[in-house]
Length: 119
Image (cartoon, rainbow, N blue to C red; front, side):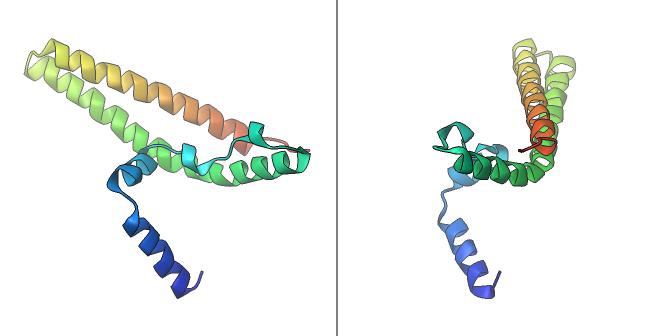
């Protein structure tokens, strides 16, 4: 990448709204292409190759989600033990279960994409 390409990439990120940046920071679906939308065998193969190349970013998202899971669980413990706020603690424990489920889904997708055999 040249210096000019770096400047264009930085300008594109600077123009991106914060909501979009936050979404891309937490969710990975924007990195991948839909293989079912491919019109023929060559497009499908190209999409699968692209998705296999992008699966290297799953560990980054897993680290982010594991931090979020631990943070939610910690807040649930704090609200339950220290503040005796059972409704808030239940909300944070539920969020930690949802993020843990998301991590399981990401892990399975990562395993399948990283070990996929393309013919």
